[in-house]
Length: 165
Image (cartoon, rainbow, N blue to C red):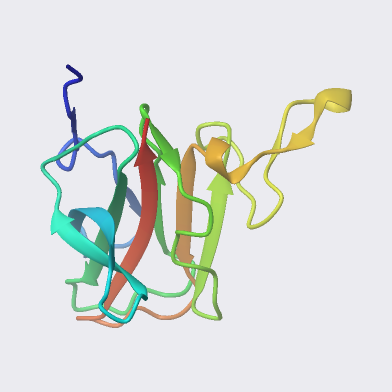
């Protein structure tokens, strides 16, 4: 019998970067919520996602991570200062098009080389003649950069999904 894969909610490496702020404490508070996603069919035949808090998941199940970032300081954080990077953990596979997308307020980028390089689209892997575009399921890191002022008390929710292998 296969053992369920334990969702590493507390061990998820969440990197939040604020560049050179003149503060002794972190201006950001981050909260990670983890859910197992299942699809149910409604009476009218349409399907909808249902979310249950994840403590464990089995291979083939989809897990959604929600990262809630709040500016808990008294200062406005300028554009480009808040950068949130999360790894796609070993034993999981990124679900294409599941990350909170880029907008006028947010830049979403991906890496397929453990965070060494990032691109918004067409993430490349390999060198020289072996260089190819990575399939999104091969992504190893997701990174968001906030492109607008983050005022005191502002909250931002970022989402991405993985499939348990």
